[in-house]
Every structure is written in structure tokens, then in C-alpha cells.
Length: 494
Image 1 (cartoon, rainbow, N blue to C red):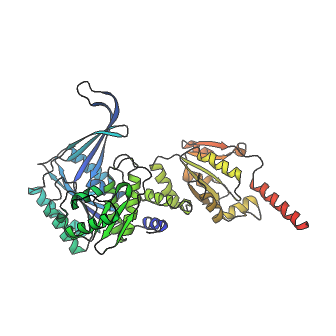
Image 2: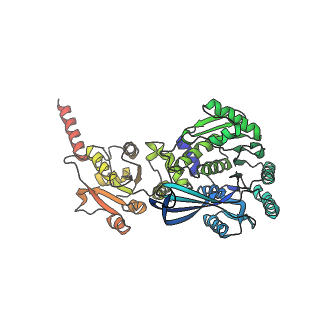
Image 3: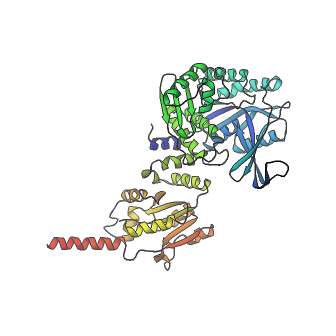
């Protein structure tokens, strides 16, 4: 497996590949409210609706995931001549997805899935659709639009939800044009007939879909290997990638290269859209020229983020980088530059985490520091510690300080369980770093009550709060160093 630091670098230095999405476009609608009683008309819950939200679903969600990663996305498919179709086009364009290849078919409605939600629980789904294979003028127009768009892409995704867009003619045209241009074609499949995807690069069924295709249950890796080989043979593919939910992702190529990447989810909250995230991540990284193994590993980390959220969710680069850093418990916490800090903060804010910031020299760590940092962490969801660099410590503390280098001080802080990230700053005061972070909570020791907490006005102006942490009497780096010097002098006289 690839080192987490290398995966992080891959994401940070990725470009903006153009990816074409062809498939079934769906408008996802969430109606949320409360269930407080059962209907007197039938034994069913009554949902008192309080809000409704429309989101991009189906093939469009693959595009939204790619946009979040920084790709240029062209989306091709069919929508109805109705308000739902216009709403879906607007949502796609608001994401920055190109929609010139969307074909309007007046003979069919735009696909809409309405989910009724009570809190975090889905109690009913209502589908509006016509799943017949597209035909007639709409199909002819789509076939005419596809060749040019395939040729200018660096990867193509066929997102098959079984709703009619990917008929044999569309699939065969896309695969043929991609082969001419040597462009990979990734398929999120539907149904049991994988021969219809013949000539594509790879397929990404989940375990249940793979079992349906090969006609048997799959258990151990040996079963997965045989199933993957069958899928590759059925579709004349280069590889099969089988998503396994809580068991991660298995992949195998036609040359026998294989791997089983364990799941990265901390908790499974909602699997909606996880398959879209996986194929989007695979397409993005393969378009960037990464190996299948690296692409699968990154897709697996992204899926771990998605299943912890309600509904479809597009994973950003900053979120993926933040998740990769969490897999490197100590060194992954150390933020080495401003751009990385901005990415981390953006990821935390998107997850609606309450950010706590504190700062200091942290030269010789002692029990006072530990209790101080625990106090700070208790005031929010994540704790970012700012550390004075070596030059500023020398200016503040005098000759002989710091005792420990910045590298050593940040490494020790990063090893503490209550610290979520560590960054350094070169100024004598934390004013600039506080303004850059703009934390929800700023923590300093209670000895700053009379001196004035640097950054207080800025934090409070932006809606944050300041807390003063209690100090442990007699515990400071200075007293520890004085005691050490005393011991040295006594040792010298004996």
C-alpha cells in the first residue's frame, strides 16, 4: 500500500483533469420534518414537513464529486422538458458542470427521487421516472454530441442507474471513441449483463451487484478474486473494483494484480452516494495518471468521509487531505505551510467543527501544559496549537532558549491525544496567526487576564469567545530549568 504521506502529496499536487460523465441524471429531493403520531387512516407515520431541499443525484452526483476535487466536468445525459429538468440543469451549472450535452426529451420526465426524512431516518422514498431505454430524436442527438466530448476528456465515466440513458448504442459509441483516443472508461454498472460494457477499462460494482452478476455469494478474498476475473472476462475489461461497504474495496486486474484496501469510515451514517464518490475519485486520479492501487486507496478514504454524512456529499481536496493526515497520528498533525493550514481549516469548517486555538513556546513540556491543553480542547471540537518558531522564542526568552528546536517541540505536541493540529509562526505575538485562523474559541492562560489577550478583539468581533485557562501553581518551563541548573551545580561540587 502507498504511504499516507505520499497519498497526501498526490492530492495536494493534483491538476484539473477534464472528465466526461455519461449516464442517468437524477434530481434528489429531501423533505424533512418530524413524526409525532400514526395516521388514523392507516398504520403509517404522519410526517409534518418543515423543509425541502433539492440536490444533484445519479450521474450528476459523480460530476459534483469531481468538481469538488478540482476537475473540469462535462455531463451528458437526458432530462425531461419539465420544471424538475430545469431545476437539475441549474443545480449542475451552479456547481460549474458543463451542461451543453444535456438532451431534453419531451417524451419522458426528469428522474426525481423524493426522500421523506424524520430526523436522520429515511421513512419513505417516492420515485418519479420512466426507465425505458432512450430512443428516437433524443438518442440520435445524444449520439451526435458524444464523440467530440469523449475525445477532449482524460477519462470517461459511464454512470448506469438503469434508467435508460445508457442503451447499447450509447455505451458502444463511448467505448469505441475512447479506445481510439486511448482514454480510460470507468463504469458504475447496473444489472447482471456486464457484457454490455465490453471494452471499457474497469467496472465498480458493490458486493451485491457483483454477486448478482456471477450468480453466487462472495465471502473470502479467493471468492472475490474469482468473481473479479469473471467480470473482467465478461466485459473484456482491464480491471474490476468491488466495493465491500464496511470491509473496504477489493480490486483485481486482468494481469493478476490485486489488493484489498480496508475500510476507512469511522462510523457509517448514510451510504447514499458512496458509489458515486468511489468512481469519481477513481476517474480523477486515473485521469491524473495514478496507478489503480493508489486511486483505489484514495477513493476508499473519500468513501469513509461520505458514509459519515446524511445524503449525497461531494468530498473536497481539503477534506481528503485532512482525512489522510488523520491516518498519520503524529506527523500528520503538523501543518507545515499556510496553504495546508487554510485547507485544514476549510475542511473543519465544512464539517461544522468548533475550532479552538491557543499558542505558546511549549519549550519543555510539563504537567501544567498538559492540563492547559486539555482545558483548551474541552472548549470545542478540534484544537489547533500555534507554536513560536526558534527565532521568536530566543527574542522572547533570551539566550539559551529554546532548549528544544521547533521540530522537536511540534513533534511532542502532535503526539498528544488532545491536540488535533500544530502550526508554527515567526512573529513575537500570535496576532497574525489568530487572524488567519479566526477560531471559534481562543484560549490563553489566566496570567494573561491583566496583560490583555492578543487577538481577543479580532476573535470576539467575528463571533468567537475567549477563555482563560487555570494554571498549575509552581509549574513552568523557567522553574524546571532553574531546578535543573541547580542540580548541575551541586553535582559539580561533589
